[in-house]
Length: 199
Image (cartoon, rainbow, N blue to C red):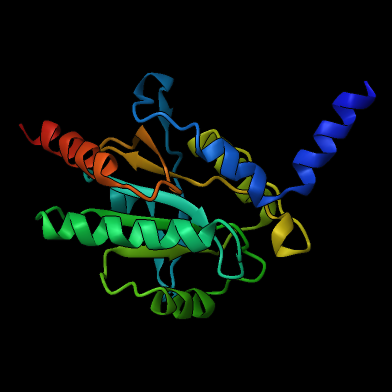
């Protein structure tokens, strides 16, 4: 029992590092899990309301990150930015959504500056906040079936490092490793998924 307790403590103390390992095991096709995004309305970096109703009928890509993250987000967010640029170059206008994993600190103003700092130029990317920690815990589990935990220090905030593709009906159909440096297969899979529905 002591061994199990020690392992648990190590996992919890490792913060984002624990989620790094989880992110590495993501599979592309998770449509059989039958995950549907619950209705939501939050606030983006422009202090505008953005909700599930605004995304109906379109594919969109989602992830979790926060502005004071100094670990996995430094890899994950440039990867996501590159994905959006590549999709745009291929003629695919996909909405991107980033849910902050630190709603306590991440105001719309801070998220706006963060988007600018990481070079987000495409207007089809909303950085969302405006919910409590408790609401985020529930939403993370219900919408994407991934764990979330908030801590007083940035390194203690646990969030998923995956990218999630949601189809036009609001179902989560793909899960990608957001830390994968070679995104060629991810890009191809996103395009194939979007194109298949248009046929």
